[in-house]
Length: 277
Image 1 (cartoon, helix red, strand yellow):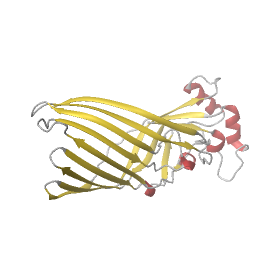
Image 2: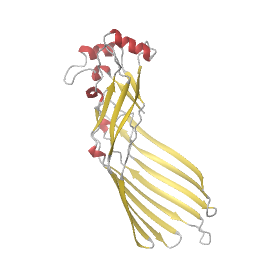
Image 3: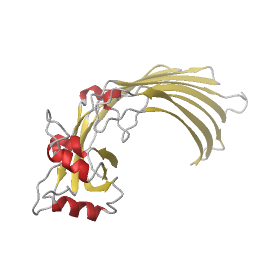
């Protein structure tokens, strides 16, 4: 699903022309900004290759590669006017029809899933301690544009919103993740009890100038802790906690329409409890 705010003056004005003149400016004065809601689905096949090497009983190396897959999400499209005088989508579509235009009812969103490379190493230090390190590269830098193709119902009326006006440059950069963790068995005579701690960092692929609120991807650091009790050969009880600390952004160079110049920061807490068989 996706929600996007549309400035009609910019969306309906050809590149290089003044958005305050022509139909774009007229629509902006008559209707104002719109909220576009999209909910699409797709099914596809992905692929990958991996290898695990254990040169010593206490040491393992892993390497995995996942191929890129292009997704085509297709589904219904709805609009909401920020103008309080337009109380329903039906009224909005009637108003567009009165000036000789119509709004799309469905859309196809094309967005690729990037190539990725994952590598890791784990080592057992005696019988009570295990350590691991994981590094992942996501090649978002090959995905430069998000394609939005609107579809209209049959009938009279011009079709103002087009693939050219809705599609957006993303200019993604290389994303990377690194994580490390330690597992400790505190009671030598009872190895079924395990304590775990970890830390990591996730670098966002989204640059400031194409940042949008429908995809608020922020770089963040991660801290985690957990405990696991192997009750017997079949049952295992686990509890964990994850803290995400999102790196603040102060965006002043937005190229989106309307501009997304925002100052944003956040954090999240994720407790978990599981009984597995």
